[in-house]
Image 1 (cartoon, helix red, strand yellow):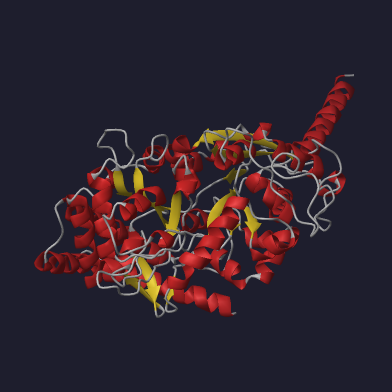
Image 2 (tube, rainbow, N blue to C red):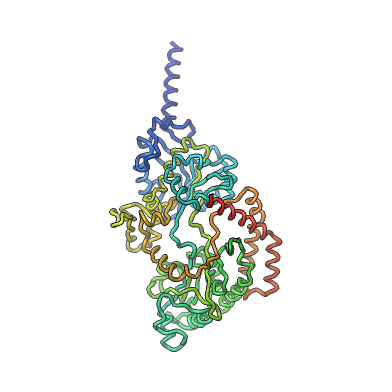
Amino acid sequence: MKHKTFGKLLACLLAAVMLFALFAGCGGKKGGGGADLEALGYQWEDTDAPIVKDKDSISFHVLAQKNAMTPNYSDLQVFRDLYDETHVNIDWENITESAYAERKALILSDKDNWPDAIYHAGFTSAEISRYSRRNTIVTISDYLEYMPNFSAILERRPDIRAAVTSYDGKIYSLPRIDEMGLTGNPNLLFMNKNWLLELIRDGSIDFIKESDVVDGLQLDLTQMTAILELFRDRDMNKNNKDDEIPMSFVFNNWQGNQTDLYGAFGLPDNPDHMTIIDGEVVLTAVDERFKTATNFLADWIKEDIVPLSVLENSQDAFLASGKGQEKLGAFYWWESATVVSNPDNYIVLRPLKGLNGEEPVLGLSNYPEISTGGVVVMSSCENPEVLLTWFDRHYDPLWSAQLNYGPIGVAYEEEPDENGKLVQKDPPEGMTADEFRLQLAPMGIMCLTEYEWDNYVNMEPRAKLRLERLEKYANPYNPENVDRIPTLSFTLEEINILAQYEVNVDNYLMQNYMQWLLNGGVSDAAFNSFKSKLNEIGLQQVLQCYQSAYDRYLANQAE
């Protein structure tokens, strides 16, 4: 009797284990074997059909850092809609951006509690190399068969394949591809037209006419200085306060920064102060024109044309300074509506000419339109092919649009336009486009390139306006021999060299740059000493690593 009872118990236990294996899915924390994919009805070929037959038959635990304004991902309609289409359940664990930055290394070292994947992973090239060698993360290129959308993108765009491929020829992370043709030139120069017209009408300036005060006005540095000095010295906003800000920007920010001023001196600068000229990676900060332009900007700061606070203000502080009572005479940003309460009071200027009327040039930002390291899948994940097929749906054009802006019916009109393309809805009254978007979309991995914009999705109105303005007033000033530094993958040796030298080079550069601007400029002798010191602390080694990685990138594109 004992043996029969024990046999029944053993049979029940085995049956329970088999059921758990069938329905548990990955569940890095939960453990257990992988699911029976055939029993789940798993498929990847039909990208419009469910990935598995029944809802809740498989679940994955995904860790995601999240913007503070965005609801928990389990509450986002776009993810609930994706669940309805795929039948794959995601158990989201949200973490704040600051907490993720602090705990990232600890999370990755705690193998017993790994999630199945990390969304908004933010892995650098060095981290991808480190954790792939330790077998912490899955080799995604081994699963491209199960990812038809992503595979089609890699086939269509060799440059994207080159950007996401590690130095060993494999892919370890999923990218965010957000191409609008905007990030290369992240600055436009705006000026208060009413203030300018007042100066013309009262005879304070005579080098431009009232009819000139329209979008596309071009001034040289001498003219701009004369105007900004008057903005500084007069009560332009008529509030009996000395609160006018003649010129503003966000120092060394990825957008709305000071680097277009350097173009008036013939230097194609950007916030990294590193670019590609004639196929060679160069540091703009060692160019003599950088010294000359910095001395000019330091003089503007000394004369309170640019407030000293600009060097310390955050992007949020800059944006706040433009709201309410008009204070800004001129500023750099992509669009006036984001910065000032009355955007119609501002015109867009062309890039400033030099002191003697020299034609300006504009550098190209290195801010990536192809961002790698967006999602990594942990090696403890069981059934990674199912999870990667779910992530592959993010690269479907219509899902990319919704994951980046919000769901159809909320962020987009229910019906497409006459060309079959999604049309964005206006944000609710009293809410900015950015606020609306953050409440609706995770803005993680996706793909919106020229192909998707042409065939599936309309750009949001403000993006169209930016693009139109950039095409008129910025792009024509980009030299043909200047290229942005693309997303690069470094070898282990290069990563070690960069770890040894790059931070020291960057810190030394920025420390001196700030001192020059604060102290009225830099002498020839001090600038020469600065250049020598950069070479002593590893500048050439850093440049060589970037050059080698860039040369590999070009070679991978050509294959």
